[in-house]
Length: 220
Image (cartoon, rainbow, N blue to C red; front, side):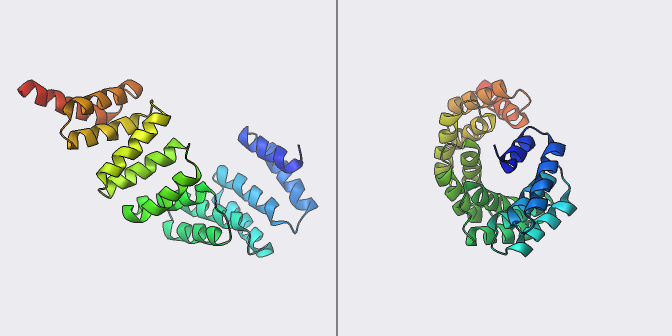
């Protein structure tokens, strides 16, 4: 395992000091290589050292202005600080420079979700789903944006897809329950709310949904 791979593994294992030592060695050995600065920036971002992380990403861009991963890193940095316009600009630049991974499209979708521009989120989240079809969390966020944009039938399909991949997804059960209720199917809605509460007993929205249905059924 080379130094870079070892440092990334240390990061995954939460051994940040060891990772920092190796990234620092790599930068000293290859001061003109932007990759070392991007990786160190990612480490600093991971430990919420935003000021220094920004410095490292910008240094990588200074060395090579076409370093797509540095713009992605800046996008993540600004997203974490809720500077969504700056994050969007950097994610878009990363895509322009050839970064075509699902994560960058997903994060762009999440920006528009945060701005409550749900229809604008959809093409980015759909692209993320296409690139990572097995990632049920991406599928769930896509379904959520579909529901928030009032594409109810499409949202229903997306939540069902999530539950195929992960039957224990409490929020997908809850949202499926809401859609079932909109369709007038109280029995299926109740099932989904109960499943949501089985998986996550403190799911307040599912508890409210279950109570409301039970109250209606008592009155019938």
